[in-house]
Length: 103
Image (cartoon, rainbow, N blue to C red; front, side, top):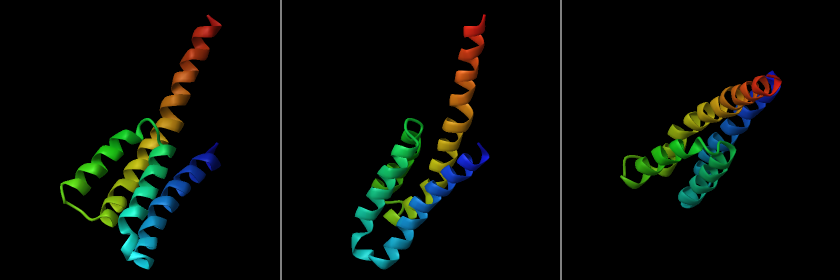
């Protein structure tokens, strides 16, 4: 189980940081690369990823940061939310359900 957690965090960081690195290689496609990484991260962390998406959209559309900066800011938020969801909340929910079924 520990390997799955590490693999999940690694995938999230590779998607987020890979997008930032790709922005340096293809600066003319910055918004497209940000959108692709953003939606990939949102799919990995659905439904809690909605909160990170909201933060990212506010930063981008209010003009507070560029697409690359937004990706850099929200990638750790996606990682924390996804980890919390998949490895804390959902197992606790099913553990509680299993205890009820035994009664």
